[in-house]
Each structure stands twice: as structure tokens, then as C-alpha cells.
Length: 268
Image 1 (cartoon, rainbow, N blue to C red):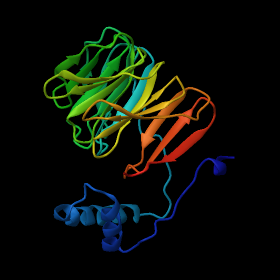
Image 2: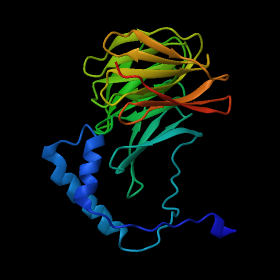
Image 3: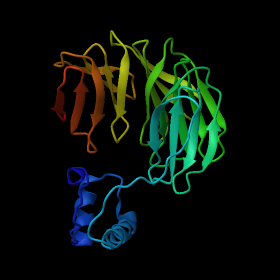
């Protein structure tokens, strides 16, 4: 029945200052100087959510985005912009509120598969393609800053570090590469997997990156040296996803073996 699909939730009003202080303990980016701003944002959120008791998801817009199927979508941090990648070899930038297409990012010679904003800033976009290249773009103008070349097979995953100084790409060539955003140059090539790399994730401090591979393992790497620190085994099928939690104490991995593993990092 429709009642089983539509779910509502109740907003519980809590002590905003106490809530922000609790968040501040866990979030390294929330400093004392921006605490008041965060309190203000939480208060505004409470006011907005408190306008009605029940909230439901509903269809907002349907956009005829591309002439061929889409591959991936991504929001910027504020949600004001989102991007779509497609088999038509383009990435499009959209205004969320109006549904207006702002830019079409053209230049790839094959499927645009992996896409991301450099959140939390959101002023840059990276696109990874089956043409073996990654491109870096301006969100505001749609201009291409750099084309990163070096992979010998399709790029299927990518990620910015939180500091927005590096973008990492994972490829079907069994390697990942770290690229300097400012210089447009490769910093390290991460070699150690025996099969395709399909997932990667930086930690929040930017000194570690994990790579998930079809060889059923997850690599933990030192971003400063490019050296593999650990190889995590245990899955019996290809890795499909890998992520750090926010405080970098845990790594979670998903696999084609139908299991998910949560691993606790040992701090030295």
C-alpha cells in the first residue's frame, strides 16, 4: 500500500547550543570562530523543519538532461548545484532550484563516468572518462582548467581531498593516481592492486586514501609518500565501495560477495 512507501518523521526540538557543542567535539573543521554561525544555521533549520509536523518526499522536477543514458549524479555541498554525467560524453551543470542547465562540459572523447564537486568549496568539478583522462573544470564558467593524462584504461572513480589540493582517480588499469589540482600534474601513481580499482576515498585530514579493487582487497595509502601502508583482506568477492567515516576511525567496505565490513583503525 502507499502507506508502506510514504514515511513521515517528527522534528524534536533540542538545545541548539548543546547540540552544536556536541557536534564540535566530533567535527575538526568546526572551530570556535565559526561556532556562532553553525548555531545560527541549526536554529534556521529547526525553524524550517518545525513549520509542519509531517514531511514527505515528492517529485520536484524531471529534467531531460542528456541524449544518452546517465552514468552518475552529484550535488555540491549546499545543494544549489548538481551535475550529471552521461554516455553522450558530456557532464552538465544544473541549478537545483530552477532546473536550468548552466553549462555543458564538453571535451571528453568517450563516456563520462565518474564526476564530483570539490566539496565543501564546490567551485571545481572533476570528470573521469572511459577515454582514460580526467578533466578539471570551473563550476562558475564551465572552463576546463586541466586534462589529466596517464591512465592506460578507463577511469571509473574519482575523489577530491577535503582540502581541495588533490584529486584521485581510479582506473581499470589497476592503478590509482593522485593529481595536483593547481599544477595539473600527477603526484603519485598508486600501484599494488592486481585488478581494477573501482572505489576510493580520502580521509578528512587528507593524509590517507583507501582504494577498493576487483582483486577483493582494499589498499590503505600514505598520501604524502604514495606508499601502501596496509592491504585489507577478508572479502570473497570484488570490492564495490569503500569509505572512511568522518573522524577516520572506521573504514567500511561493500563487496560483490553480498557482505559489508566495518574495520576499526588502530591509532599509533
